[in-house]
Amino acid sequence: MIKVSVIVTIHNEGLFLPECLSSICRQSLKDIEIICINDASEDNSAEILKYYANKDRRIKIINQNNIGQAACRNWGIIASQGKYLCFIDAGDWIDPSFLEKIYNTAALENADIACGSIIHIDQEAQADTVLKYTRKQTAQTLTQKFKLLHMPQINYICNKLYKHDFIATQELCFDTDDKLANIKWCSETAKKAGKIISVPGIYYYHRQQDIETTADEREIKKSKEAQIDLILKNKIRVKIPYARKTKIRVLGLPIIKILSNSNYKRYYLFGIKFFDVRSTRKF
Image (tube, rainbow, N blue to C red):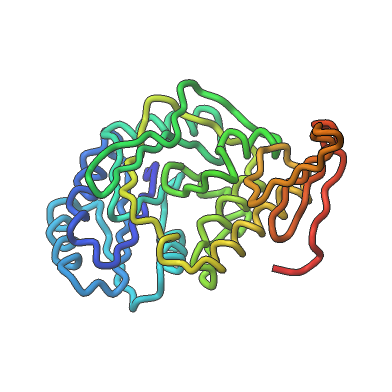
């Protein structure tokens, strides 16, 4: 039985791909399949994939004609046969026991999503822990789930394991028209998941070449505002990033505080929130 389908999307990642594939092939969990979608790479990525596929029969190569990361991930979901799914970017890597520990926890707890800690690796190879789970926690309400995932501040797909039946039943797929499809995916999966669990002691290493760096400011703003709109509509009690803070003072004392962004405002009276105002425009 295939326990985990690992989906790797590749587009001109020859420099880092060997480290990524080696970390997956060396996993202590052996009952996995490794689905590699080569999205019209023009470097030596195709040769690297063939080399690793000859060494490890669990590797399956799917070639695409530059359809984009979101569409490649959708193809990976379609091709997958594992009980759980895991997405890994071609420039990243994982701990040797990452899949075993996260799978065992997810299966034992019957969780729709399990998540591990994240370490950023910058261009100077310096490490920075941006998300660390020190204990196992479960979340089932919307507020609990968003807090456990540290959303909306953090929107990561690749530090998680997703139950295949959950993805199929909810008909979840990546929006191929959205360059920041990861933000929408994180919101939708968190909202629809029955149970989410954190797994301590495992790390996903993310090399900082995030897709957001290639998206223009308007697209970033649109995706993040749509996510915040979802939070406000569902009354999810999490900290929201605001672009602007305004204080109205009387006799030098801050009486009213207004936290605002382009599509919403939150009003506080004497430090107590008393209402929100949202724009009615569509995203």
